[in-house]
Structures are given as C-alpha cells and as structure tokens.
Image 1 (tube, rainbow, N blue to C red):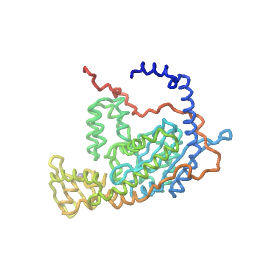
Image 2: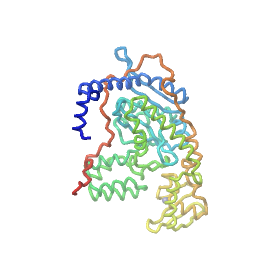
Image 3: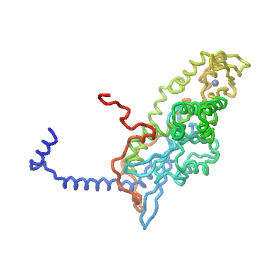
Image 4: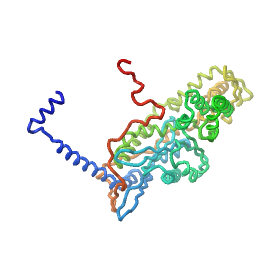
Length: 451
Ligand SMILES: [Zn+2]
C-alpha cells in the first residue's frame, strides 16, 4: 500500500484516524514518562553504590554530590570493583591506559576509565567513573582515588598511557610524579599530519615509533630530517620516552605504542553509553561479571601454560630463529647472526638481546629463541610470568558478584539526588565515529551505479 492510499484510508476510517495534535500530545506524554525514569535513576544512584558494596565487599564506590539551594545534585561517581582491583595488583603489568569518552545519551558527562593489559595482551578494566567534564580537577579526582585503590607507593614503577586528554597531564604530574608516560602514537600522528600530511612522513613516523633500539630510532629520525626538517623538529620537541619503543621503560614488559586497550573498552561498552546513569553503571558491571567468568574458564584451553595469542607471537619468532646462526661465548652469552639483519648479542642470565625486544616484552625474541635452542633449553621457561597461566588464574580469580534488581537494594535515608541542574533530555544519540579532518565524508569513497 502506498503512503497516499494509507493516508486516505486512515483519514476516512473512523477508528484509526489520529490527528497531528494527538500525535504531539502522545509524544509529550512519552517524554514525560521517559524523563521521569531517567530522573529516578539519579535518585537511586546512592542505593546502587550501597548495593555494590554489599554484594562485592571491598570494592570502592564514591559518590560526589553538591548542595544548592537546599537541594542535592549529582556530580560524580567512581567505581572500582574488588575483583578488578585485586586482579590488577596480583598479576597485571604495571601499565595503565587512561581515557575519557563523552556520554551523549540520557546520562550526560564523561566516562573516565583506567584499563590495564592481561596475560593475553587484551584489555583488563580496573576502574571507571562518570564525571561532569574532562579537566585537571576531574582527572586529579580520578587518578588520586585510583592510586589509593591500587596501593601505589612508588609511581616510578608504573607506565601511564593516554591520548593526552584535557587535564590529565597536570593531574599525572601532581599525583603520579615519577611515573613513565606514553602517548598513543595514532593520536600523535593525527596532530602531526595537520602540519605534515603525506604517506611518506606517516610511514617514517611509525617506523621511528616502532624502532626498538636507540640506534634504529636515530636512523629513522635522520631520514625524517632529510625529507622534512620542520617535521623532524616537531618530533624532536617531544619527549622520546613518550612515543618510541627505543626509549620505553623495559620493566613494564609491554611495548604498546597505541592506547588500544582503552579503545577496546569504549567499544565493548558502546551499548551502555547512551543509557541512564544506573543502567549504564549496571551494564558495565554486568559485562565485567560475564567477562571475568569467561576469562577464568578460558584458561582450560591454554596450551603449555600460555595463551594462544602469546603462543602465536612465539611461533613467529621461532620461524625467524630458524634463519639465525648461533655461536656461544660461554654458557649464557651468544652471538646470533641473522641472514639479513646482522649480529645480535643475547644474554640468557640478564634476559636481554641487543635488539631490545626480549626485555621490552618479556618474551624471547627470535635471537633469544635461537640461543635457547642452541643450549637445548625450553623457550617457554624464558617467557615472563605475566603471560603464564598461574598469573592469569590469579588475575581473574576474583568474582564480580551478581546483583539483584533495584527494588531489592537498600534505600538511603539521605536527601534524594537530583540530576545536574543543567540537565536536559537529549535527542537521539549519535553513534558514528567522528571523522578526521582529512578523511573523506561517509559514502564519498563508494562509486555510484554508473561510476
Ligand atoms: Zn633479539
């Protein structure tokens, strides 16, 4: 039936005719109900925090409200579940990704998250918070509680990674003084290309970021200087330890140059991001509950005490090792020569190789594998504990406990919490990714029927 036919029919049939005015009133009524339920969620946010503490004892929940004109308004909420906290302390690498993502749905503000890396090199959520906006004050508030939660006494053992969001740099300087800092290279490149576009410079920048030794880094930078001196100066103004593997702290056993774990976290909770405050928090907790359980059970499928992801990385190194020629200096020191890359020095006591990949990741590089084979030893014995089954079991042994429905939560006798005063119901939330300045608009790359 065409639209015209349908309209004719509805306008002539007595019972199915709905006037525009009636549509308008129905919409207004629906908005009222919806707004009410969104507002109700702010009222129960305190009960939710109490319920979290009752079902997951040892967790941290912090609710910040402000009093204005005798009324109590919602400001921020921070949650770090006991299982996440304990798992990180027990066996995750001291690497924390920090990121904020905008909430454009029924809960306004920014979701701040701290995410680590587990023994499969995949994301490990630590803590999350809803704050009004990203600035020095909110980041300080978040990283200070986080530091306390993770019982950090010596910041210098930690590496913090981010996209350099607004306010975080100041917060880290004052509260995580001495911690190593890394900035996501993809984010850095998107700033770099505004002044220095082009594929060649992009490739050279990535080569410099991925260079694992200082010599290789200097070589890459020299090539950049030859191509474009201003681009070279732009990069040299940055602190090398913030973006290139060659200058990374090797005690953290992770050579990531991208803040991928935070991106993966944001996309995992995408569906929750446009929900009202308690639904959003509860969806994240539910996702964590299921994830922890799945991870705990997945260990049974591991082969030889390491995950498939790590197994695959070692297999790649083994393939290269087959092309190496190894000579012993003594029982633990080797000179390993690769067909095309030249010679490397491997020390099996210090667990180092002059390519630096062994110490950067805690996994034997191809040269180390060749040396281990020469001694007739087992490669798996040289894999860092962070990747081993025992650590993984400890990391995920805490249980994110299930929660009953809201009518079974303890209710607070405090003044009810209202949404932030500037709160307004949003329109339909946008879910598509914000495109880069130089990216073609959606559909521009598709050819039409004739094209
Ligand atoms: Zn090596």
